[in-house]
Image (cartoon, rainbow, N blue to C red; front, side, top):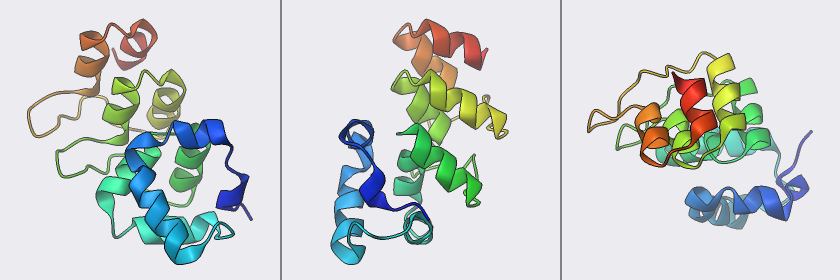
Length: 130
């Protein structure tokens, strides 16, 4: 079983948007909690689930393998693909697309993940999202 304690400092830094969620989770469950417990906890916190899937490749993969819906959207309509695109994370974009993420999904303001990649000129992400 995978525990949160196995996450490296580099992995945690990539999870900046969901830092508050992890602080709260670790407060409630401790660092020895299993990844399955985190997934169950995140099911009731859709925004944080989306941020988590778009933040770090190993966590994203684990959550998806546990059954997280790849096109889950937060309150703004952002999916993990939006988060990966704005953070220039081609590795997560590849993973999400392989898991059937909808690259044409729009947020509440009509923006697609590629729009963020184009805005910041993230070439590799643009190519993946075309």
